[in-house]
Length: 332
Image 1 (cartoon, rainbow, N blue to C red):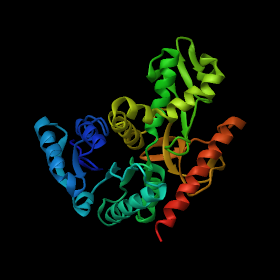
Image 2 (tube, rainbow, N blue to C red; image 1 turned 90 degrees about the horizontal axis):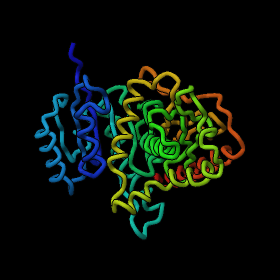
Image 3 (cartoon, helix red, strand yellow; image 1 turned 135 degrees about the vertical axis):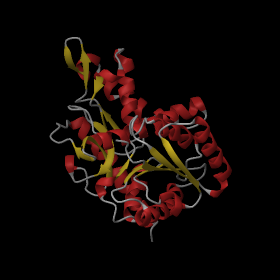
Image 4 (cartoon, helix red, strand yellow; image 1 turned 90 degrees about the vertical axis):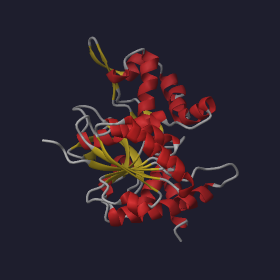
């Protein structure tokens, strides 16, 4: 029996990440090869012509799963009946801008979009915030969409998670699919903590710990962490544009695992509401290791945290607390 289409919103859809993301969704990368979708694409009036061009390309690509396209600059029209919202649009930091200026701009954007989702999205809509500062933008969105459950709002740290998998894969010359259970703790920023303490690699003689196979704590505690933390900046330097393809792919990974579920014995990283687990202050959107089942995520519990990791978890939590205070000062 054919499935009903899922309505998927992408904001900032005419931008680079949006342009990479919408064909992935239309091809079934996000929700599966048997799930029809209706794409809702939102962008600002200045990008209306480009947005229409994206719509024309989607029509021209003749994706069998794509059952409709809404391309609009009207936030209410964009949010009407959506089941999944991928919030890519935001105000980027520009040269000479203070953090509070950027935060103020994004508070305004996310207040408007949250209000539209609150009033017009489908019941149980799942929201993924991609635009930076992603953790705090997600927090602001929840503030203005109180009827959307905390469990249904998340931010993207899967890109950092995938970057960590990729670095381990390259270091050990193994398939990336054989590396499991890295963790990104905290903020999607340069204070994030990529952690391989509990990560494993599938080998011909069974699972082995990443730390045992790498056998180089100096690299794991130094270059590995800084490479993952600074990867976005390195890509901008090389490509002259920010990460788009990898961000779009990671957004698909995030939603797919959230909706379909994570494989048994595997966890992924998601920016979710802290409940105080691992002594992270409650009420922050913080990246944790999670498993997903039946459309719900659960924080992986009981992992040991050594002294080095503890300091890293606390540092990124401190930054998120500062961002939260700054964002809330912009609400006044």
